[in-house]
Length: 578
Image (cartoon, rainbow, N blue to C red; front, side):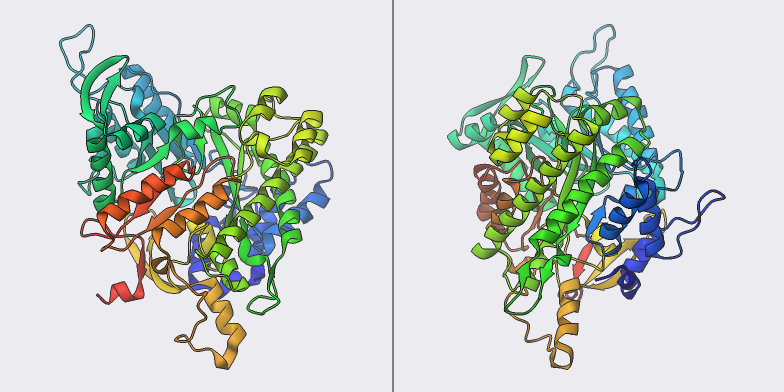
């Protein structure tokens, strides 16, 4: 699909109007079309290149055809000369100091970050549990959850740049004394609405669950309570089954596989979970739109355009690397972190649509193999591009070649990449991450989001009106479905779709995990993935999803099961009629 097709989809046009269109200023012209938006972005990001004309053309070439979709903050803000917005989507806040001064310094810093359009993650495990003594006064601590409510209210009042509302991730370790209250915190629909919640799960805890061992809840070396590990696990599972939260992140695995294991500890992620980050960590996002890389779609000759992917990724790495230098940062500490490590997260969107173009059934063994092939192609291209950038512009500041090359992820890369890192260094510490891409996928003609299967080929989506909480319902049609309809012409029959047209409801949950695991092997950060399970899915089978995620080497897992307590932002047409 060319850029002119943006206006073909009403919802795509609406997304552009609301999220990405620049309305103009005395210094910068108004965007009159999506093409203008892409030109603005390409021109701005090429500004710090010696040959800016050449690179503006290169950047525009991957933007205009929606081959590459930068994070929404980049599309909305690049080239606008707004001084109070950032081009980074994700941040993790500093370690919260267990004091009133420390906690409210975090409130202030998170407010400044969200004001500029950044989503933030917090680790609340450093705050003493409710009921603890406070030295120097006759009082008891109110605990982490009370301060989460303060942050929730703060977030609610701050409207982020470009009409993007604040987003927050709250994380607590599985051995914190207040973990039980944390797990059940969102059972009241009105509570902590501005937070996603995840439990930081340790390998030791999973093994204790398997062994049905006791589990100590500890703060600063003091055991506050001992519970049965399996009972705590059941509390997490029941809450997730009925309320879709909390998710879980496997914090030990995240740190073990971290490329910068030697100079940072990760305790939290960005709001959607695809970017585990250190204190003050910041990361750029962008996605390769795989729906643009099918040659001869819907035919026996259909195949993957690997060369096109490699070329696009090579340009995208340079583009995002430039943004690191061009972006505003809400806090000086975030700028220091970003500049010294130069993290980025190039991922994918449109995977399910690509499978349809190639005649591959999502969740089949062939699709699992293809997913790994695609992600390895992207990752290897990104690392090779970053090495070339290091030759030209220098390696990232925190690179210790010997330790970096000894990392678990890096040591599994192809020999030529490792040899060239040893010789030339590498520009960026991390290069890949798979984000949910909901909004930018709609903008690109409603391609399937991230690595997810197609939710439904026709469905209704709730869209927030303006800056308030009011929503409207918009009907959208999947991109691959629409392309197939055009391909078949008068012969198209919606009741006789090929068997490779599968939606998320058709994919068993464990098949979702197979796809995620195939990708995770080649992703140096993490993956945002929601496994949709039917309402009548058995609870015992549901629990197995999480243990399987652990066994398959994933870094996190999130599920969504519709229930009487919750509904999603996407509504299938058949569900509307019920």
